[in-house]
Amino acid sequence: MKIGELVKRTGVPKETIHYYIREGLLRKPRKSGSNVAEYTEGHVERILLVKELRDIFFLPIPEIKKILKQSRKQSAPDQAASDLHNKYFRPLDRLLSTEIVGGEAFRQATGLGRKWLAIMEEWGVITHRVRSGRPVYSRDDVIIGRLMVDMDELGFGPKDGYDPEELKRIADFIRTFVRSSHRDYYQRNLERLSSAELDEKGSKFAEIMSLFFYHIYRKLVREEYHHLRRARGSQTATARRANPSTGKGYSNE
Image 1 (cartoon, helix red, strand yellow):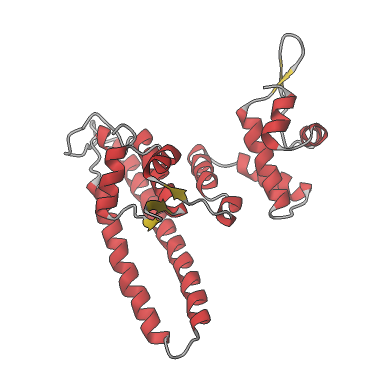
Image 2: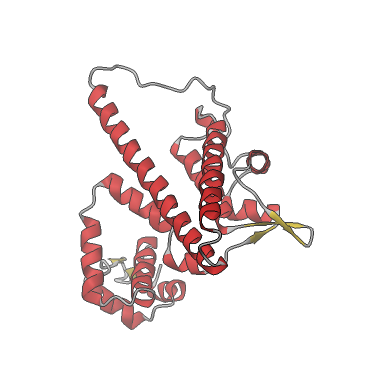
């Protein structure tokens, strides 16, 4: 794309883009045969990241350069994980309401197929509330739908033999834990704390436990992959799940 389109896509002036290039925040564009600078989606993503770090976190350019330099030192798996994390946990998105009204709008926003949306709602993996007779999906439900499509693309979907009911079992386990732990918390603190304090501490506890689940899962997966890589040399075949492939993924039905 040309510089004009890049300016339109990012909302950043041309002069600022040239400044980012001079400062090393942005790689130089490729020059076409007519010596016209050609920019890519990578430039768009990097500019939006720099813009977010400046506008949301108020970081100076030297600090942003350190962050970007450190990110280049990451291994390929860590970089892939960081890219996914940035995709789903952009600070700006957390400040905005991203409710989706209507099943069709939800499917368009997530890529999740009609059949799998119905199944996940039946299992309680995705839920909605009703407003004026229409289903309303939360930001978390939208992210869950997108994550399922990403799982599918990575080979962790029904078309590759992965059992979708694993998602139901995970949701059921977490639901049981949440009901038990939060009910216990409220009962123990109901008389000691005000309603506002209960809500504030409860919200913080929810965020802490969300991070705990994220990091414990991430740690255990890395340990398991390390173990499997060590054992790989002595094995000639990789283990496959017993579930037969359906030939279709979460986004197909």
